[in-house]
Length: 261
Image 1 (cartoon, helix red, strand yellow):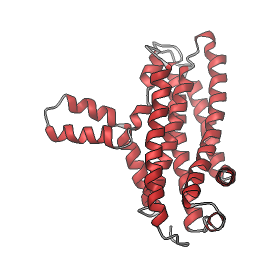
Image 2: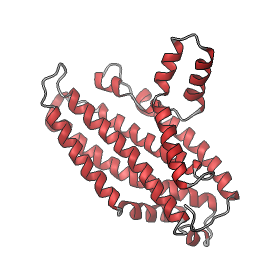
Image 3: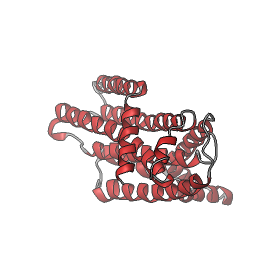
């Protein structure tokens, strides 16, 4: 495990040095500024617009970061032969794949840590005793979704090119984001085919809507850690482990070539 951890931290440092990380941080600051300015608007619920814009922007930035970091990793592997040195040591292919996931997870985790500190401080300064700190729990769930996006993409890339893997991953994410709405819509219709499609999307594909409890958190109506934190963690672990096993099985059989993206 020491070799896996060392490779994961090496990859994380490499990803965090990318120009994309600086762009993500600058975009985060810009969106925080936008959310603060919108928060001045007089609406029915104080600070609601501020919370919504800040959380939504950071959620999508985490997902975009996971996709960009994944593409950088795949590029290093397939164009630069990044795998050559690690796999020339006693590190197995399974361990190498785990290190790739770990490296991206560390990079996303650092962004998440910065978001949590900044958001917590802003909530305390702006909302005071009425601060809705459940927003920080929702932000953590978005980071879990971003990590699952990474594992979906890494698994898909074992069968297709890097660019196609990114495209398919984004499609999976968009479909999974709308899974709950599709399910609710299917319950109101009598179309049997629609029921089947909704069931497949909701239960057999990664359901990213399970990480989104924004409406519940903003209303603070019936919030509890089991539903908002424990269940999403278990869901991410189950899907992540299953996809890792599939990716490892294919990666063991795949020819590792340099120069093909």
